[in-house]
Image (cartoon, rainbow, N blue to C red; front, side, top):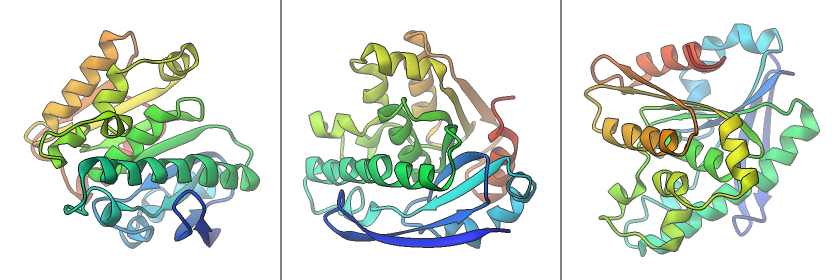
Length: 240
């Protein structure tokens, strides 16, 4: 299987070195955001390239395993929540203005899928909701979509810029609205997962604005790799 490792110093992140792994040679581009404090090696270490091996070998998917700035944003607890949120804004700019053009230089396919599990689902949702002009499908697995759960309830304009429920409820340009209506939005979560309420909240906000989405509630907790492997296999090609 074709695999590449890339690293560059990101202008959007003040020169921070960022790594990513690319699997596959063609097809829709799957942008993978790791779980809390995971790395760009998390999905490979979990054998996810093998789980999606048929998609990669046949040129249906090309997988981009991204790194994160969780340790400089939501888990740097001593910082003001607005400052932590701003670091995530910078991270989203890195993905949008550096990773997206990089991916087009390697593969002209314009169908980008954003995915992740747990905090990675949050990252994917922020990227999709902020960039509906480039993201065509969102697959969020066991995601927490109200980031004020990590700010002690605090919110300001900067926090709202990277809070999925606020992004979904906030003002949208005609172009953003059209992009979200076109996007295939899939959220999968366990019925006993503490994040179930924010999944229902985000789904309800979107439906209330005429933006369709598929909320899939799995039996039990469903918040770990055995379930996430099944979820991505089931939903990477679209909602069931």
